[in-house]
Amino acid sequence: MLKKKKRRKSLVFTSSINITPLMDVLTVLLFFLIKSMSVTSLDVKETEDLRLPASYIEVSAEEAVVVALSKKELLIGQEKLIPLVDNKFPKKEIGDDLRTLKSLNKVLKKKYENRMALYKDVEGADLSKVPAPKLLIQADKDLPFGLVKYVLHTVAGAGYTDYQFIIVPKN
Amino acid sequence: MRPKKKRNKHSLPDEDLNITSLMDILTTLLFFILMVMSMQKFSVLESTSLTAGEESKDNKPTFTLQVTVHSEKFANIWLGPIDKLDKKMVDKKSLYSFLKRNFEGKDKEGFSRKVEGKDLNDVINKVQTNLIAIKKGFPNEMNAVLSFRDKITYQQMIDAISGIRELGPKREGFIYRNLANQREKSKVLFPQVIIAEEGPGV
Image (spheres, each protein chain N blue to C red):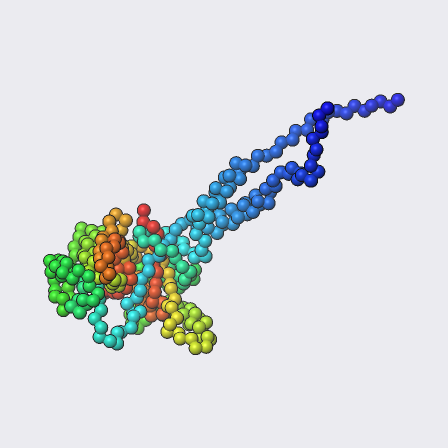
């Protein structure tokens, strides 16, 4: 007679992870982030040389060309354009009218022409009715208006008559 | 003997809710949002260049308001001729009374006023008080020209633009009558600010 094999009662612990609180936290965090997020490809950075001014006005920024003037240089997008010398623009950069920045004017005019080229191909398009392109200006809050006005004058001369100053909320 | 309970052969089997896929989606979405989001909020202050407009071909009288910030303690307000702007004006008597008391000039030539203060905030507050009276007289006008001396800083420029556009959070809105003679309360002054240069100054 065959001996019956003793089957050991193996102790198998089965436990299930309770992920309900994890789900709660993730869902709440997700909703909070969706509520407070700002998804924009607009790259606005503050550095030591570029501290934005504050204001209580709250208007969202739209995608546009960004011209940044820090204490050291003038940039368009991420491209460094004109370095400042003794907190002033170099004389060789200033045009004959003593107000226009030559390099900035050249770059902006090219961008403006590229934008208008999209409309020129449209038959019967009235270019005068095309809305003026927008431009974002980022400048350090301590810079004098005497320096900023060169940028404003150049920008307007290149066709960007509607500009927007990037600001941070005033606490 | 108790009759056996009939089990419905077609009842749905008990199943646990499988939330693995939901967790996957939520986690992926969470990481995506964390990667692209920008916590820092930026705003913009819109403005127009003085060179944007074209010279008017007709001789229609236009509302002209200019504020010049000379320094952080001194500004100037100039209101152009208003004698031919009756159709745009509300409560003409109050406006004329205010202008006669606080400004220099005449309705055919324009009005001017110098504003002084201990700092720029004080100057802006005083300018706003005058602009409120002008806005009550011309509720539909939105344009104002703002010019600066070279030594004004960019932050001060932004403060001035903000002050011309609307009243700050610490100030109460003002009540005015619109052209339809209805009472409205608002904090908006002249939101379409046109930037001009005043020159280096003294």
